[in-house]
Length: 75
Length: 200
Image (cartoon, rainbow over all chains, first blue to last red; front, side, top):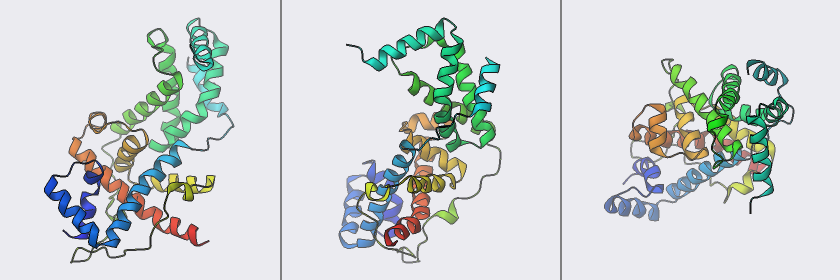
């Protein structure tokens, strides 16, 4: 299995959707390829970063007055 | 034993159902900034404002049917996201830029062309300031809209693949492909920023 194939399978690997055969080949590649181990880690971290950045979004305190007025007027 | 929050929310809903205008205005003022921030992840400014407006009007129309099983804030969040998705579906005939330039490149032997350096151990190390979180959100905003929407719905909203497929009118397989490509592209966009920040 090449690095390209491993990276292509990442999503399904994390969702535990690989067949036993493909999973063995996938994990066998990780045992000998530090670059793919690093990529897998960065892929997982990317997911965590995206989630944390949106969940912990710093919403401005100021109220959008024009939008509030439009909403109240439309009611 | 109901919580203080649930008692307060029940009282608010009762006031809204009585047609209490001050209660409605208070809710709009309290929630509009947050909902606008959510909508801006999906659509441009004008559509985001429309989506927020539609959300509050939907609440006003559906107050009698609102079931108090779910929290009002959660309901508003879900409705504003759905309003944005409706706008995206209406605009889906627009040409979308390709995600290919944002994906990792490979050599003929299957190795990555630019392996790069190792990333930090955890997200906490990276997300130590508002500016870093803003950078991550700016990177998400750079993704092509179809891929960005799937990433937001799956990874941020944590909706199921089946629901995302149904909402977007695409196959579950297409959702998986777009999600994986969106994550890869986001990783490529974050790579220089993450590593640059570590060296500074």
